[in-house]
Length: 344
Image (cartoon, rainbow, N blue to C red; front, side, top):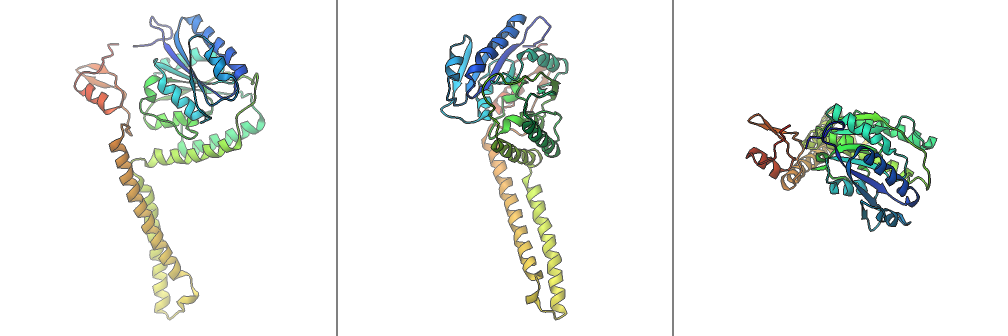
């Protein structure tokens, strides 16, 4: 299906809302979403993922019409909530939002229009005027700076949950840890096109923020993990083996120094050179060995899983464009001509 915001075929939305103890915000948020969609005649499904709430969030969501509720057994985190909701989505566009009401559903049409007008795969909201505490904004800016240094992605505000994705973005993506903040960076690594648009950010109407320092630390660790995955996911030997070679060079320098001291009848027991030579050589062996083992494990991972480190947008055969998912079976179908053809 070819979707157009102002064309004859209207977009169909899967709206995923991550919720943890937001019983007083949910009803108004869902009403706003329905009003935006009803005004434009859009077909939608609303998926509320209750991340182990201890209040009545699940009951409130379950009492509303046309709302599907995924209820976790305990609090697994926002990343798990978005992963569950996005993989359950059925329609062409997947919209993610927080359940606290700070994301404005009125921004959804603009995000979709921007995505279609620029032929993007993802459009992320940018909270230019954030309605958060100074401490939260300060930490967020520091994290964004580190994200720019390590990941060099193209957006300003990865922490904004209000985003619009094409459904195929999640065909081969699984989220862990605190990765929900870095979905655009993760998709950009796979070749998807990313855009950004300023959105309205509203004060929290009820409840308390779930932000804490532990989430920041986890997020910083995830940045390092993504950096490694982005740069060395298919060639870890280049990083670890390179470090090993560096240690070998250091060992060679200290070894030459040790030989020179021995040749000039210096007392080796009073110098560190012999010890540093042995230490550097062993460290080099360990890093090279680790690089080889990691490289083997990466190859095994890609061999036994359906995931691929590349992403195919489309296959053109006999002048016809066949849009396919990146799974091996779908690619095989495309090569044999059995994939669905987008005549548009």
